[in-house]
Length: 87
Image: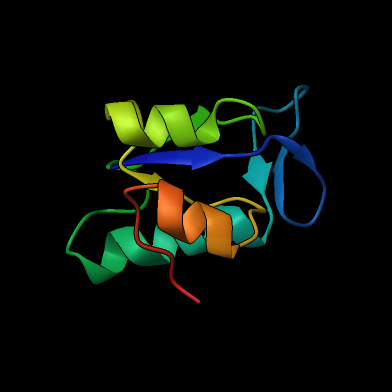
């Protein structure tokens, strides 16, 4: 599963450059989704950086399978994006 995440927000989606270890709620959620659909969270999840400016493009084009990072669900996004928001 290709999971679009943020890498610079400690506590949500963070990549420790020195150790290569990812942490935060978004990372835990990616792992939980993977496990829920029968994947191994340790081997079957690929974390792909998704910035504020390219996250929806990556999702729409299939670069990522799921976007799990700080993103607000707005009426305009709901109407204009071909995406399902979980909330």
